[in-house]
Length: 280
Ligand code: MG
Image (cartoon, rainbow, N blue to C red; front, top):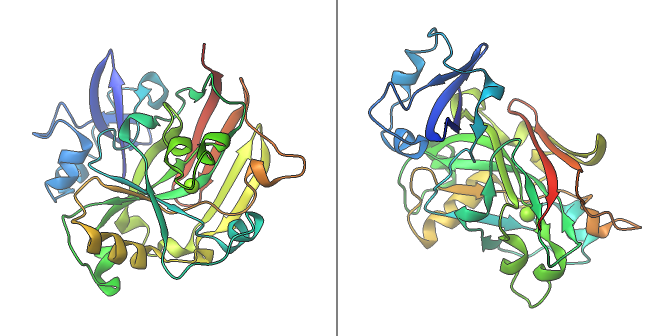
């Protein structure tokens, strides 16, 4: 099942994406957000509506980030060997984690904003894991059972601000730099998230291409580690790291500019597409 968040005539809602468009779940079910629907713990009320006529064409709505209001967005840095080596760093025994704030996210086909303060906006195609159940200290063996679904994420990064100090945060949470979409595919359709292929394209050119079995810290281990720190809640997002091929490490470097189109495609999920807009 594909679930998304959107606005239609300025009213925020969430829905199920079917062959004919979006079935508006927000106007049929008791929960008003996708996060709350996931937290209710039962997808069957949506599955029961699978044959309903779509309310809107998929392109007739304004897409919001899959989860617009997560309690936490935990990003993983340096989680593919090819990216670690292009940055000249070493593999660390524990995952590199940093936060992104929900206000930095944008939906599918919404503008990815290059801020006034930088010309070093870079793409980072990543697989996002959406948590489905509140959990603490989950074992690796049980970790995939707490996942609600998976989506594409572009952890777009303002490289000069990322490097102002040893803390990544400023470069990782600029306004409208976190595309998240176009929908989440529920976990029942992706039994093994280590068997996906991820590709990032900039204006159609392939910039990153990997399989997710190449992560340094696996998704079960990330969930076990993060849930040891504090409880994970329904709707929380773990953004699992980018593979090699980022623009900043190319020779010559490639940074995104006004009008560029960046796409993140993950097999079994779909294509997240955003056009870059310069602020101001
Ligand atoms: Mg990243």
